[in-house]
Image (cartoon, rainbow, N blue to C red; front, top):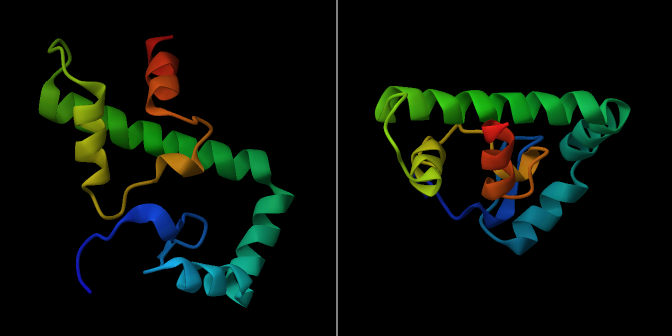
Length: 108
């Protein structure tokens, strides 16, 4: 399988995408994933902040380059452009639960 798949079964810590629920379940039990989760438990705030910072940088970069500073644009439209990049940081790995929370953060 090539290209992007649905991100329902994606592990941001390992940068691993699984095809289905069973594959994701197997991944969660793997030694590689368990090591990554141990590292996460030792520095939860740092890892979460790092993913959040990377997501913010990517979003603002797309917003600045493609839409300009003064142009009004849809937040969801920009987000769709961000997630079109195969190597983007997934929002579910950040401190923001929703795109609206992230946009409110940017507004402040």
